Amino acid sequence: MSLNWMGFLMIHFQSKENIIDWLIDNCPRPAIERALIDGRVEFLGGFDQIPPSTLPGWIVRVVSIYSKQWNVAILANNIKHIYEIRIIKSIPWKNWMGELNGIMRNKLFSGDYPQKYKELKDGKNKSF
Image (cartoon, rainbow, N blue to C red; front, side):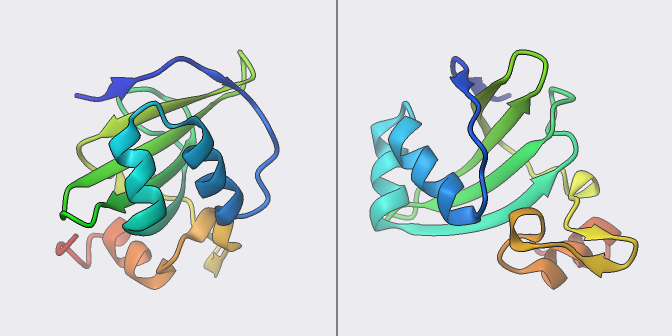
């Protein structure tokens, strides 16, 4: 199950900081907005599909100071030229796209801990 909010006009993200700042400004849940500012944020990188949709996007793990955790997905709907925000339960590691032809891509795609995420994609690490 995921929660879906209305679309937001697309802008060009150049860094994970752009994405997190955009989420702070646009997240419709005040608790998540506070956690983005005061809690821990882990940028998981880019995914070529984020179920239940087939849309690509990015996932950010947000943990509040009270240890409440959310996986926030920003979906890029290139047909409607909007972003959608969803709260998802599980991370689709098989769709992580932080590596291309054996080379780690930039942080916008590879995330904060690319080696760990590559192991999760390859099924070598089940701890996440």
